[in-house]
Length: 414
Ligand code: ADP
Image 1 (cartoon, rainbow, N blue to C red):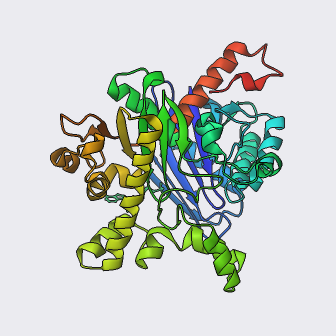
Image 2: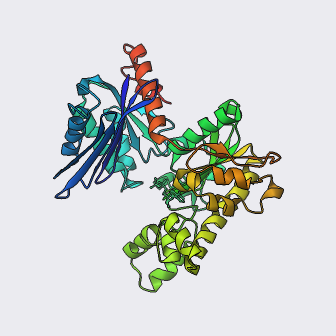
Image 3: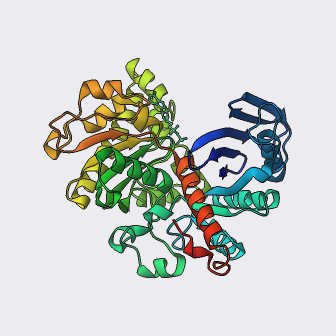
């Protein structure tokens, strides 16, 4: 069964075509700069790399180009788009309604539109992707996979802010958490590596990329996570502050900063780039720090300190755990950052093995000493694969239930 996975941004479409259940990637593509005069499209298949440059004015044209590339006579992966059995969509915000991946029908689309307020930069293009895929592939199931869904098991004590309760009732102000697809994928993989059923796995997952978040996973379920109503809260990120005193904003408003200035500042000009003044990219910062740049060094120190602090708090939340998992571009590759984070944590049960840490760059592995009470795992995340697996599962169930589900699509929740 061929499954197309789509991730639509405001000016881009990322896609992967999977052959399921073998989980073989048949094609991987990216269309960038939609809406600009020259857009770029690249696709990799067994037939090689296909690159096209042309003006792509809209997501409608972008999806037509996806179809053209997938069915390209030499470097395509399909004879016809009819071979695709289902389409899985990454959707950033599923609010409180979506606790798992779900078959999308017209009524659910309108619910999703409601959540656009909560993720104004992400949900509208994600929805556009769903509309366009429906136009292009009207006969097949469209499945929504939400960044927030894995975190819907977080208890109220962890998701509610100590603000007036009426804000939660009126405006749904609460912690939602993001990167759920990644945290869920590495949780499932960690269970395999630990040789335990996922229902008995207690771990702390650290997704460290440009955006960074951590999750406390108890019995295979998310019970707390560092991002909040928006992805701003929690860890220090490439350009976001993470946790800071919100009264700083009132202070700066009184100093004359506008809301737009502050929004831009905390989301785009803070974090690693804000502290260092040099770069939001960890590799650049490591290079600068080695060359003696003290602000680059400081940015790295503050980044590591925040992750360490969250590990400590989640160890308390979980009353200890089986493993700490590192994933994302930084988590999977940055051995110096892992060392910095895990330094002096041996009395908490985390003992890093320097040799194993140095040997585990961009590959999966265990990096703790043999006597470490808590394991330390490096796992490459694969959000597209999880979306493909859940879409495949819903599509198969849909086939089996074809006659009975007409009015109850939500029974197909993963
Ligand atoms: P995104 O959140 O955009 O998906 P990634 O997960 O790709 O981002 O992570 C990007 C971050 O990973 C960057 O800060 C980059 O410097 C860092 N990174 C990638 N490879 C390495 C490496 N080999 N060593 C150190 N940092 C790395």
